Image 1 (cartoon, rainbow, N blue to C red):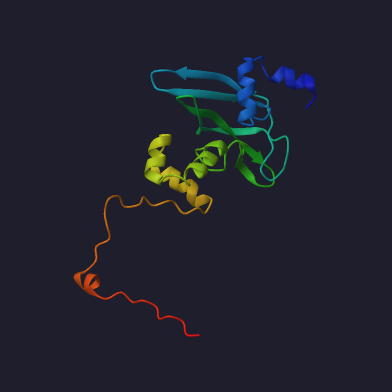
Image 2: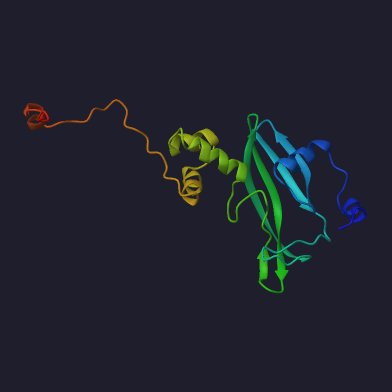
Length: 186
């Protein structure tokens, strides 16, 4: 599209929104319409829109497809300070002459994922240092969602170590003589 079409389709928005568009790789014709900071619920809700006459590219590569319908979706992004970040978009469903009706693939998240790529990277990094239960509680997500990310990337989750419990040995093991290897002969 030429610059005049882009200027007409994309409204003038808050300059702060442009930074978030860069962070989450929001492509044209999608743009940030509004951001709600709620101190009470501890959330930042980023609402995305696209122009009514916008066209999109199918995952198969076919370009300039019109929107057939919308599918409301929410993704969890990285926290902003102490606020949980949630991205809202009515994802366009496209009519492709080759594939039929397909959902537009957003660049900031995997298909069928409720987490952004940045949040998934955060989970993968933190999973090296904490068990799933603690990690899920730390991030404010369910253990199931965290383990789904680890399973997708074929990483075995860390199992919490037993704390304060020694391995029990039977009385026979305690009294049995320890086997010492014989000295090597020269």
